[in-house]
Length: 86
Image 1 (tube, rainbow, N blue to C red):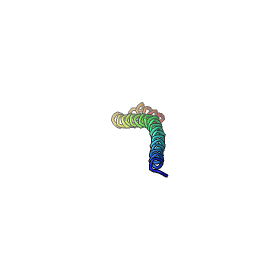
Image 2 (cartoon, helix red, strand yellow):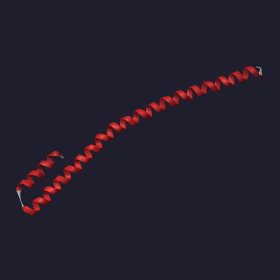
Image 3 (cartoon, one colour):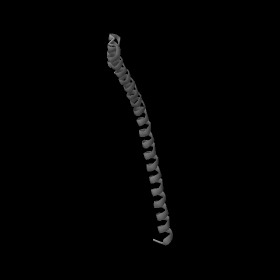
Image 4 (cartoon, rainbow, N blue to C red):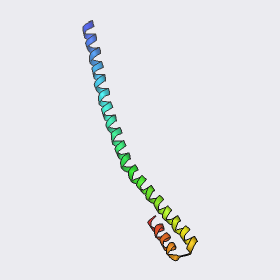
């Protein structure tokens, strides 16, 4: 084998390695992008649910405090309604 053939094989193998690594990188970036989008679809409703739970807890504690002040049964009813919403 002369030098020209060896250099041709070397550059060919380097080009093949570059193409394979580029294809692999493309596939992995697409997979990461898909995972990030799926995570966004899961996290957003989860945050919204947590905020609704905090609001419900706040309303329930407000009803308990108001009941302890004036002993009105409507506050107990409101507390039970917020408990059902939870």
